[in-house]
Image 1 (spheres, helix red, strand yellow):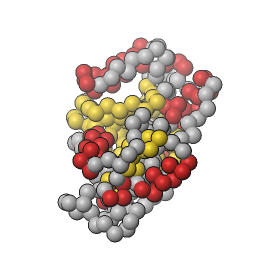
Image 2: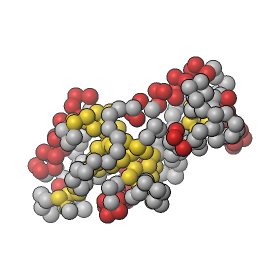
Image 3: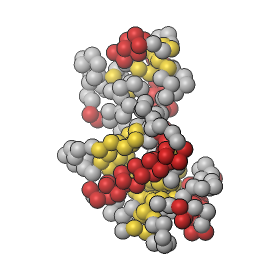
Image 4: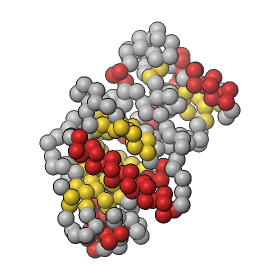
Length: 263
């Protein structure tokens, strides 16, 4: 699909523009054989609420960032290697429509497009890029993926004990294994989940027992202060600007034959 754009001048210009939009804080994206396949705004389901993010699909990575200035400046760059990506359809749920899940070994989350057509375009192009990448490298698709976190607003009380009501004193935490919202008492232990983090991460008591039974490297129970710090640092990319869905132009996907977007 993108063979004719490889190492072309038009692709080089597009790549340079993306790098410029992320500024000096962004990672260099220029790489031999890398092609920009498409770009556009999606609504990412973050821990607190849905927020706009700018996405760039390359033939080997998916890049996204927070929108600082529309179409001109982005920050908090995140790069997901496509060889570990899997997409999964989501049914419409009230106001949340045209969504799907992007799964990776280290991080998984839901995103939403403005229309069903845009959703299908994104899913199709991502799946094609993943398939081509795995075929060229003679690799197998990833089988282990991180859990999708339940948004804070969907849990007023602990999803493990069902008793603790969340408030300013009783904070919400997330189990890194199942993604549920839990209280501190029900998630006081950590466990090393290799595809999520090299260090032990917070898990709920239910998952800790299951993981410990199936084998692994559990850590000793940790204090609330250390776990509080772990939770806040892991969500730093979800606290920046932008929420909701603007009425900007449709996403752009590029043809291989000519320098024109597919619309």
